[in-house]
Amino acid sequence: MGNQNPSAPSRVRSRIAGHDHPNRGGLIHDNSRHTARFTVIGNHLAQHADLSLLAIGLGTHIQSLPRGARIDIKTLAARFPEGVTRIAAALRELEKHGYLRRERLRIPGGRIVTRTVSCNQPGHSREANEPRPRRTPTPRPKALPAVPTPVTSALLHPATDLLAGLRRHDSRLLLSVTDTAHLAPGVAAWLERDVAPAEVRRALIDGLPTEPLHRPAALLAHRLTRHLPPPPPFRPPAPEPPVRHPLQNCDGCNRAFRAPEPGRCRDCRRHPAH
Image (cartoon, rainbow, N blue to C red):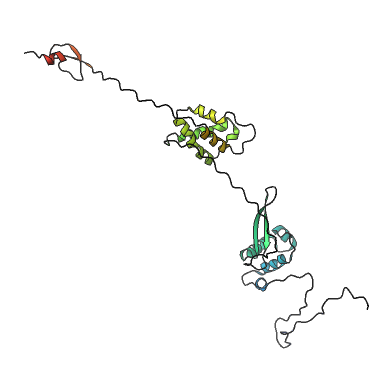
């Protein structure tokens, strides 16, 4: 047997009949079967009732591209003459109707990138054999440690001023409004315990590590709680001094005596004159 011609088509070109009536106007299909380099496009996209013609054409083009191809606006505008504005609008149409989906992923190194997913059938889940991207969970900010609570709010204002002034002693202690509001009750609790503001400041800034402070507010909250001094010792109120009445002249003997009002002294009241 002779050698087969490797360049010969694998199937004879055939006309798909059934609707090619010679006496009927309108569209007639002259189709050939594709055996390589073809893409299956659903009529739900090709004949979409709400998408613009540009969006349908762009969606068809995107579905024909290989995995990993760039489909950002700049790349598409360099490929087609419609321009950035019209291409961006067409992409928004496709995204609105589910033909495109954007996913934000964190890649090794911490950088976040946006990946665009093309959906050939909106509403259907991707095939089981499609490898799903591994998403690195975004670390949540750690909550600040709790701080002591003052008995009253009378000292919150001076406590806030003290915290705002820490940056003058150490530039690393520049606190946000949120951190200052969280720490102020702890400082007020110290001030309530008869600790002078200078002593509170020294307790917060003395002996700080020399390396960069990644969470200065958390460090200050820890110090406010761990080194909280005890309440001052109880001091009973001092007794009131005895009442000292003014001097009065006795109406009976004219002697001076102390009394709240003028009148007679004690002797004259005991032995009144007859």
